[in-house]
Image (cartoon, rainbow, N blue to C red):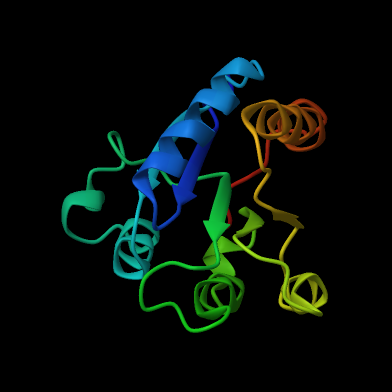
Length: 148
């Protein structure tokens, strides 16, 4: 029996995270969804610190959807941090940008992002993006092994 997938939404706007969670549900994604809204909470969740030490309640995510404009976030610090940690290699990271800065997508990909999207402007586009993620990352992938 394979474990249920988990998606971590790391976005500064809890309202957007809720909208994204609804879009994931509408797209037929049955993964457990957890949300954090700051850089510090993202690090704590991924490290299993404090409240997040309870991995039954806060399982290690298979996918992190990372908003670039997290409070106190300097450019791509969270993405760099995730990709610098061998034990997090199996996590897919999608970047959700609130803007379209020149070269931002290329920088994200160079740093190890698995995908990059400007946040869709309406709910229907958000659901379509979630459906593509479901097909690409949740349906087509073999269950992964946890690194030792």
